Amino acid sequence: MKIRVYYEDTDVGGRVYHSKYLNYCERARSEIFFQEGKKPVYEDYHFVIRKLTAHYYAPAYFADILDVKTKITKLSRISVEIEQTIWREEEKIFALDITLVCLKGERPARFPDYFMELFRKLV
Amino acid sequence: MKIRVYYEDTDVGGRVYHSKYLNYCERARSEIFFQEGKKPVYEDYHFVIRKLTAHYYAPAYFADILDVKTKITKLSRISVEIEQTIWREEEKIFALDITLVCLKGERPARFPDYFMELFRKLV
Amino acid sequence: MKIRVYYEDTDVGGRVYHSKYLNYCERARSEIFFQEGKKPVYEDYHFVIRKLTAHYYAPAYFADILDVKTKITKLSRISVEIEQTIWREEEKIFALDITLVCLKGERPARFPDYFMELFRKLV
Amino acid sequence: MKIRVYYEDTDVGGRVYHSKYLNYCERARSEIFFQEGKKPVYEDYHFVIRKLTAHYYAPAYFADILDVKTKITKLSRISVEIEQTIWREEEKIFALDITLVCLKGERPARFPDYFMELFRKLV
Image (cartoon, rainbow over all chains, first blue to last red; front, side, top):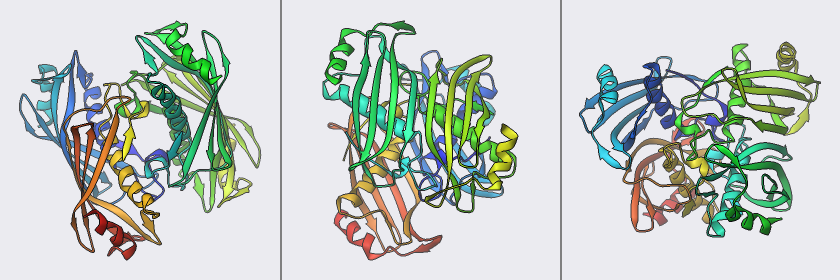
């Protein structure tokens, strides 16, 4: 998934504000659902983040075009671990490891098949 | 209401990103409700913006402390016009005229007394 | 220019947060420069917003694909007035009239040819 | 440092958008400098994030008042590790471990005394 860096993403330091990389990764996760004709919500089921670890290797700048790559590194019925990396051409500038679980309303739930079918394609 | 400018509010140009002033004004409107022990939602009633006009007089910068002033310029049961100005000490840097109406769920509604009581204090 | 609505753009009311439409319009203005192999900054020249008026006709929702249309309605060497509209398929949901001027460093300036050449294509 | 949750911080799921907690923590870090009459930039020196790990324990909601606590867990001349936690009254809802280093312009640098003096108070 290609993402352009706009003014709103940068800060006075001239670089992309650090939390925006998480937004880029979330856009990429959502877009995977959209591309399959799905949404990242299903009936009362939705995702919640439990934990994430981010590494910042190099800054991104205004007007850059970035590429977000997404793959699943661990999958069960109750949690999914996803590795996402952001690239500017051949240079890896950011990496995210994120663990998501599922809620049904406010209560923990197993992933419904609607989500599992898509996850299995990304393993 | 005092607002501090943080990194997230600035852009690569070194100034506060233009749409952030609208956020500051929205915070100030919400805070008026909170200070009265209310919220800007009530049962199914909530606000929708119909129109706004913004004037940018001078830029704000990282670390600035800004002051948002809010007053109602026109009030009826179906719409409220609010004038908000943002100041850095004695200098007016931004002005917003905004017109809000009320929805109950997805349908237009008259403002409930819960909102009207608060509005009347701001006229 | 096509824009997808992601989680970050929505608020608890279930709709796109009102100031985000300004961001979408700014992305579209920047993208016009990028598509011509230019940037919306040139040497020390950059844009500043003087005034804007926004009309909200209908809300946008998570996962919507929006289309931003941009045209120049008035152009001189010292200011440019731009009309931008946001559409969801055949429905116009938002309109923006925005007036930009030029600064060279911190001082008002006439638009350099680098900007004027591009503007003339949009009139 | 107290932080109020406004509309702009929430998403359609009704909770605070996940990357906003990083913004809250960054505000708290900046505010520590401001409270000492300093800024988190000094001459050409500024901070860059190398790595962060975030744990999400419970969601925050619109109108919540949150408290951010900050302490330094490891300090040297070339990197600082900071632990920040976010609380809603007695409940810890979020924790961040973040590693910052220093750049002078674009090049790695040792923290100047201007930063070290403040850090030592937070150990």
